[in-house]
Amino acid sequence: MKRIIILLFSIGLLYSCEESKQVKPDSVGAINSLSVIIENEMWEGAVGDTIREYFAAPVHGLPWDEPLFTINQMPPEVFTDFTRNSRNVLIIAKDTSETAGIKTNLFAKPQKVAILKAPTREELINKVKNNANQIIETFKEQEIAETQRRFHRSLNKEKDLEQDFGISLTMPSIYKVVKKDDNFIWIKRLIQKGEMNILVYEMPMESIPNDSTRIQAIIEMRDSIGEKYVPGREEGMYMITEKAYAPYVYDAEIAGHKAIETKGMWEVKNFFMAGPFINYIVEDEKNDRLLVIEGFTFAPSTEKRDYMFELEAVLKTLRFIDYTEEDKQVVAE
Image 1 (cartoon, helix red, strand yellow):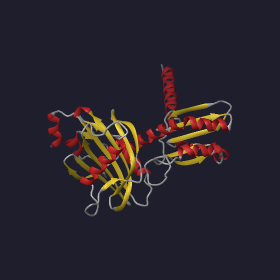
Image 2 (cartoon, rainbow, N blue to C red):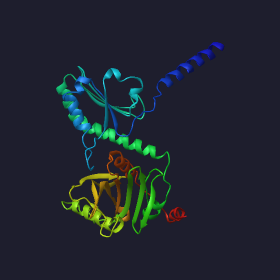
Image 3 (spheres, helix red, strand yellow):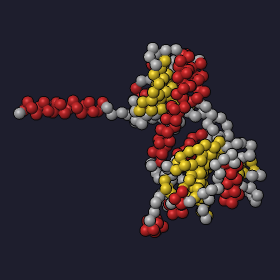
Image 4 (tube, rainbow, N blue to C red):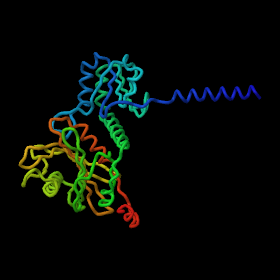
C-alpha cells in the first residue's frame, strides 16, 4: 500500500510539473507594436522594404502619415527569453521548406505569431505580399481586443446611453457625458494636449442611400449635426467634414448589424481647428432607425493614431439592449 501511495504521488507530481510547463507568460507591448524577426541583411534590403510597405503603411484618415504598427526589428539570435513575449510577432526566414501561417499563444498569451518562410528572397517577398492583409487584420483584431480588455481596469458606469438610446458602450471611467439634448449625447475624455470625443445620435432609416451619393449624404449628415450640436468659439463656427480631404467609406458590421464606416478629417467652419474622425452608421431595423456613433480627436501637434484606435475600440463595443418596460424603469432609477 505504501508503495502504491508513493507511486501515485510521483505520478501526480510529474503531471503537475508537466502542467506548469504549459503555463505561458503574459504578453507585453504597447498597443499597435510589432516585433519583426528577420536577419539584419534582409531587413535592410528588398524583403525589409516590402515588410515596411505593408506593416508600416500610413493609417487612413489621419492628418499626416503614421504607420499601422510601430515596428521593432530583431535578428533571430536575439529573439529569446522575454523578447518572445511580444503580443504581435512576425517571423520571416529563408528555409528549404515553405511556410505561411499564424499561430496563437506560441510563446505568451494573448499572442499572435505570423510565420513566413521560403527558400529565396524573391519568394519571401511574394509571401509577404500575398499574406500581409490577412496578418494585418489578425494583428488589428487582437489589438482591438487588448485595448477593450484594458478598459475594464476602471469602467464608465453612466447610464445615459442605456436610458436614451437602448445601447451600451464599454469605455474607461475617464470618459464623461458633457452634453445631452433630444436625440444626442456628447461624451468627452480630456488628454494631455487636447481631447477625445464620442457623439451618439439617431437618423431616419432611409436617410443614407446605398448608391453613388452615399458619401455626400454622410457629409451632409455630419455637417448638420455639427451645426446643431458642436459649435465653435463664435457664432457661425461649428464642426464640419473637412472639404479638402475626401473621407474613406467602407461597408462594415457592428454588433451583428450592417453598418457604414467612415474615416476622415473634421474642421471648424471659419476657424483654424481640425482633426481626425471615425464614424459608424449602424442599421437598427427593430427600432426603425440608423444609430450613429462617432469618435473624433482634437490634439494639435500630437500623433493621433493610438487615440483614434482607442476610439475605434470603444465604438466596436456597441451592444443593443432589449429592455422590457420594467427594465426601463429600473435603469431610469
